[in-house]
Amino acid sequence: MKFIWMILIATAILVTSFAATAAAQPACAPRAVILERFASQYGEVPVSAGLTSAALLIEVLASADGASWTIIATSSDGMSCLIAAGQGWRGVVPEPPGPQA
Image (tube, rainbow, N blue to C red; front, side, top):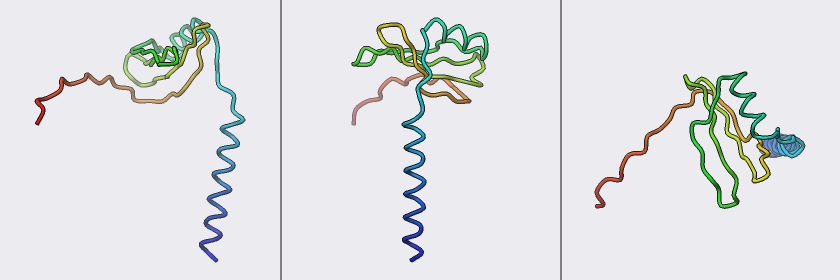
């Protein structure tokens, strides 16, 4: 019986979290507006970027000290949407591949 209650509670939590995520609207604005706002409010500027196979520009914005970061996706029409944000950004320098064994 205890097991059934745990499953019911876990299911309720999952359904609630998925419903909240589905109801949330992405925060989008023209790229220039987002870049200006994040630079002025958080000191974040683009530190890396890449293109997806769907022609989206993915950028990481970070403050100079890495205290905060934001990932945005920009479509070909110039609209950018916030994907993720957090704290403690650090750049990683890729190491050259070693000898193959």
